[in-house]
Image (tube, rainbow, N blue to C red):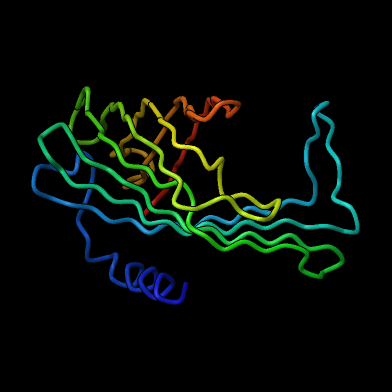
Length: 195
């Protein structure tokens, strides 16, 4: 974990030197460190009722990932994501369960359907999902422990007139896991940011 954290910090420190975008471009590459933290004080049960965890319970999941890609053609990129998670469940501020492991990696291809101009594009991505962990002896789970696949459509770009240099990324897709009884998930994401 320490080596991963140091690598993450170095990438952030020298990130301002990078010149990258999408499509990545033939012979070029891209690495993007990511960090996400999720906190919860309760859960949804089977009847869709919201419940608080018992004994002042709290759940926290920290996600550290490395997203990357290599341009293999003008309109095609090979992309990957390598994740690591740290999940903690506490009751009355005492750790009840903790899990630190790799999660579901993904590798796939992105095809850029249309370049509207140099500032926005439409893409379709197909990926395979590979669990990088074994079954855990805990109720905390990094994923479904099942290989799967994902297909998504994305629109991304930058605004050159208002909110100069801002960017947006909107995507929607479907994720299916292959083991019997595992779910099929529909998802949508929207991101707006500024460098």
